[in-house]
Structures are given as structure tokens and as C-alpha cells.
Image (cartoon, rainbow, N blue to C red; front, side, top):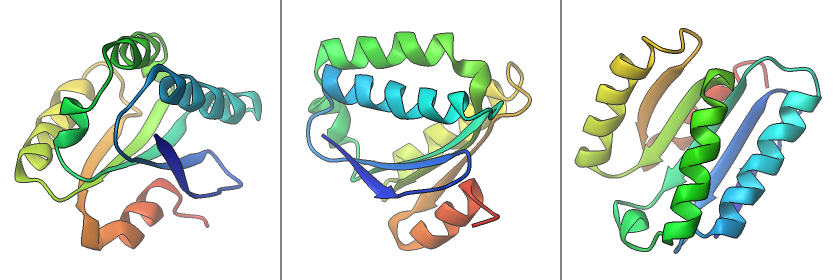
Length: 129
């Protein structure tokens, strides 16, 4: 299930994944992302908060595939991406992704934040709010 953490007027989305990630969740993220693009923004900054790696265990295959396919198609439209969690493994993944994915999308800047740094993560994706 997806929960909005905060509403933004600009090109930012802040979402939390609670429990299982389903196809409905993937479609909701797509809709929210498209709404920002339709407002005229070239890139959308996004914050994803996950409790830990259990989100992968609870992820439904159809939701995962839907999200991945959409992500690949819209990869160039992602700006800043904050991942909020409390996991050293997740932190390592985000650091590696930031280095590699930046080669294919120069606007992309991915950064890991611990759960205690949620306010900093929100400022990272929406510095003008």
C-alpha cells in the first residue's frame, strides 16, 4: 500500500510503501507522476520511504513488473530521488545506483536518508518548499 507523506505544489512526490506493493500501488505512482509532468515539469523529484528490505519480500510480482516497466519508460523524467529507510543494505544499493544511473540520466541524483533524516530528505526533493 502507498501512503502520501506530504503534498507538494511543485515537482515533488513523497510516498511511503506500507506492507505489500501491488499493481494498484504501481498504477497510483504512475498517476501521481504523470500529474506532475502534466503540470509542465520536465523532471519529477520523488521520495520513497520503506521500512526495510521486507518490502521486497511482500512485493507482488505483477506490481513489481508494472512498476519496473513504467520506471524504465520514464527513467529520463526522474530528477532527485530520496530513499528513506533504516537499512545498511538499502544504503549501499542507493549509493551504487546513484553512481551508475547518473551515467544514463544526468538529471538524476539519488540519495539515501535514514528514517531519522526524513525532514532532510523532504528538503532534498523540494528545496523551495
